[in-house]
Length: 74
Image (cartoon, rainbow, N blue to C red; front, top):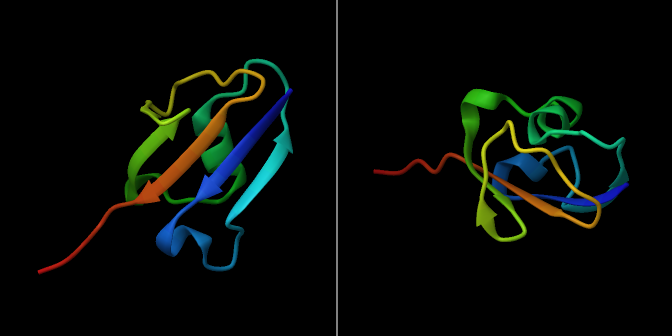
């Protein structure tokens, strides 16, 4: 099954902007986060097909996963 994974802001540093991955059926967002070595506590927004999703969401063939870090500021 193929999913597109897009990383944003600081998550791109030393990783990738977007890539298509072959993953087994039943793959969750959490598994992609682990494989990309993203610190879970720094995740701000997760979108699957432009809709908010939880880390427990099971991905389907053709899904697009977008992961944004927390935003800081003053």
